[in-house]
Image (tube, rainbow, N blue to C red; front, side, top):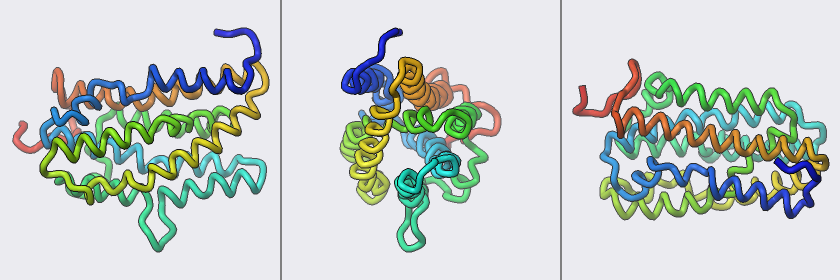
Length: 246
């Protein structure tokens, strides 16, 4: 851990290094998913569990929105709520993910109920919501910086899944198209805020820790999916069981 104040470019380099070494595109489950190595039930388990994360993004953003001190910041963060919840005339990201889940063969009522998600999924996502609610505004904004790395994983995911799963269509993966422009816009603002406001050694360490925490949230969800649906294949009581499994 550095004991000196980093220049903004140095801080950004440290943040990007966290993504290069800890972002969940490196997880074995994602490599299986993108490489066409999962069966349909395993892909369904991913889509169902990921829905809970998607559905809670606007909830965590709303908790932060209530604490932002200026109209400029609130306007910026309010746009994220619209991106995920929609504006009443067009569906947002949560509704599009529900369509993705339906497209891979899941009952949308079951998915939306979240009753069949893995316990670890719920614990990890809830921990993220609580982090954004309870930590400083700077740490909460810094935790969103995983969006810096998402366009690459989106491109890899879409091309890999379309190439390797005949039963998945471009329409199924329509969730991802807007995120290719939304995520860079969001991360550009958040990164500029962090570069400006992380102006002490303590604050810089806080934002680095916040991004590591967020990477851990994403990684732990895939750990749970791998353990339950790949190896050793121990599905906890009450969780989704793919068709054909007892």
